[in-house]
Image 1 (cartoon, helix red, strand yellow):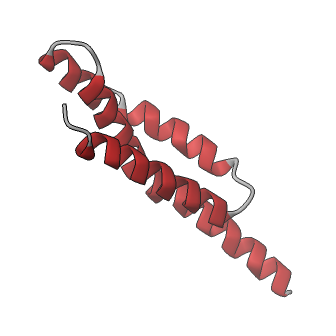
Image 2: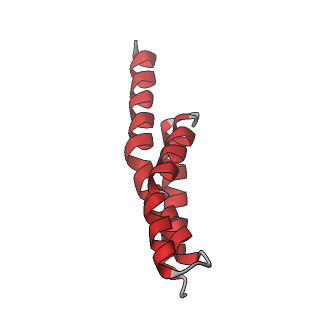
Image 3: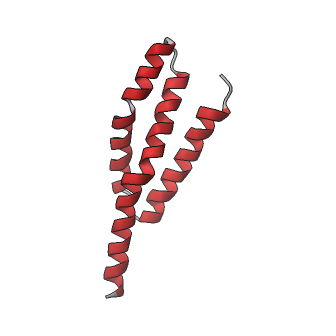
Length: 92
């Protein structure tokens, strides 16, 4: 009985990681691509705006493939921190 509850909780946390935890990851990845792309400024901003949804969907698919909820949240947090550090910490 307890293993069913833990399995259900793990599934719910993995779904939450896929839906909620990957959105900041997609936004940060999109802003990194827009910031470092060797294109005109208007083209970079459009690129960053357009790529949020495909990056979010790809990150959701990867989060659903995680073995556990802790791993899904950990990967989201680690990649999000790296991408945010690149987007806002690296001078242009």
